[in-house]
Image (cartoon, rainbow, N blue to C red; front, top):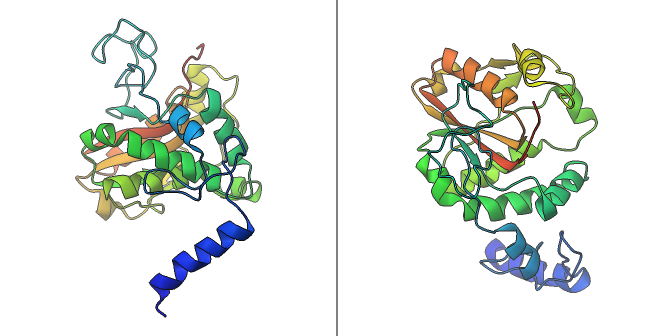
Length: 252
């Protein structure tokens, strides 16, 4: 019996002994189909993969019910970003927020990987429109890994890479130093905290390339902006940003 035929039998046996449950509500699932991951029930899947509101292409913030993507955004008006666009897979609210918060501190990456896969597929058109060559997750400083079992940005980047068919490079962008938490910091303070926090290894593969920076959550864009600055300085042609969730409102 070949390996490909063993896998379905193993999966069926595991599903019988340990019936799969939804990571969102805990309800039993059918084990997954081509369109529905085994870790999500139909209701939670539908509540996650809802159409995105109109958002600003520059910063990803909601643009308002009567605005268009080309409207002047009050969130980023007057700011100069090094990256060219932001693609939000979802907004940091409701079920998505609950799964990200609980998933980031989980022993398993199932929650983050599941929602990232569902939303990357749902936003494929927006991601393709960026026209990127390579995907780079925002890295963690090594000390962060002492308290977390995985880098959520790297999990999200892998799911986006599968949807786009683009390589994911986790070793190019590196944390040069540990930055303190940004919570409760002003916009200017966040930018200052991130300055000089990244360096680049293996610059040859980013020369003249359009890159997609991937993070789990975006609030002000200070982290991705600093990463884009370093990559452009090292020869990248352009940087775009994709995030699993965008904080919808932030007071600067």
